Image (tube, rainbow, N blue to C red; front, side, top):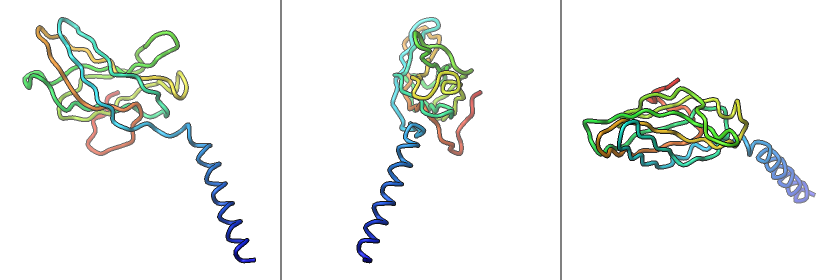
Length: 150
């Protein structure tokens, strides 16, 4: 009798856990850092990260880990969302610098729904080739020391 009850309890707990995980599966955030490389050359050069689905109403995250010229250590970014036929801006963005981490607010999920593809557009004017490398993620979880961009 005790063995049957234990097996029933274990089965009940496993079933409830499965139901709960299925229910929140679409709300899990993709905060895994993805590498990017932006290569700029020319006046108002633009480049883009790869796009990934955004799962939550959170901000996006970006950091700059290296630059090919230490005297030119910043560039501008804009969060973008795929609206069904093209990418459009979905927040203000701002200037990011080497060695810093940024939370970038956007309206992707609020305006276009869960799992909408997002990316960052980078822009920089330069007379010669300039390369930046870093990490980014479509969803963001609070970390201390991160600069908030509107």
